[in-house]
Structure formats: C-alpha cells, structure tokens
Length: 158
Image 1 (cartoon, rainbow, N blue to C red):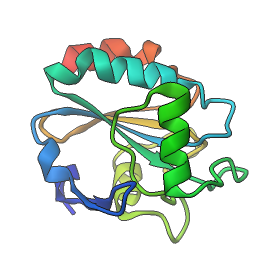
Image 2: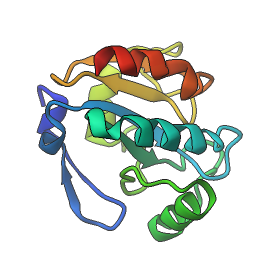
Image 3: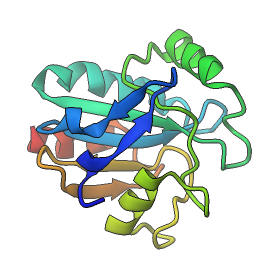
Image 4: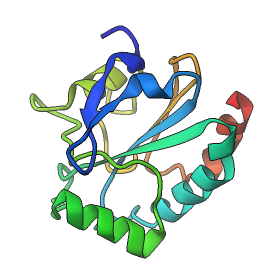
C-alpha cells in the first residue's frame, strides 16, 4: 500500500470502509478504548469532530483491546458506550489490533511512516495520527496529548 487511501477496513457494523472516500479531508486516526484512563478523550475528540467536520475533518476511531484488556466489549457494545456516554458520532471501526503479528495492515502502514517514543510500536490507547488532505501522515501524537492540544495542527491543515 502506498497511501492511506489504498486501505479498506471493516466498520463497526461489519461494513467495508474504503479510505479512498477520505481523499481531500484531514484525518485523525485514533486507537480507542472504553475502560482506559484516557477514555474521557472521547469527549474532546467528538468536540473537534463537530467543530471541523464541515471544513473537511474526519476522525476515525479504531477500538483496541491490546492494552490491559481495556476494550473488552463487542463492537455493538463499544458503539453504544461511545454514543451514550460521549455522544460519539465520528466513524468507529471494528475492534482492531494495532501491535504485533496480527496488527491491522492500516496500523502497520501508519507505524512505518511515523515513529513514536517506542519506535514503531503503539504505546497505549488514544495514540493519534494526523493525516493531511493529500494523504501524507503529518504527525503522531502520544496518548498524553489531549484532543484540544492538537487542535492548532488540525486548523493549520484545514
């Protein structure tokens, strides 16, 4: 795969999500979890999504259960939790592995393009990848970076 737009992944309801549909949009890809200390970031992510969606900004959440079993629910339970507790309306994908031999191809790609503090490995839930409208991976943010702290980077790209 040569660009982010070459990927098709499974959405939360089992549908195919072709990333080609995001061409020209600024993307924030985030691995998420419902029982994590960073879970309240869902609120900030949703606020950013609502604030900038009309300008071509999309957040894509990838629930992940690889970090201390902090995303134990089914895809349906995850979706319900996110909607009821945080009003999440941005797209959620099926539960996904982000590290190891079973890591999703899209995460292998993202990690190969940007290194974090532990090299290419994802450190924890709510690691964020910011991608420009032309598909270039611009920046990787640690889970410690709140959605509000990265807003300026998003605005600069819109």
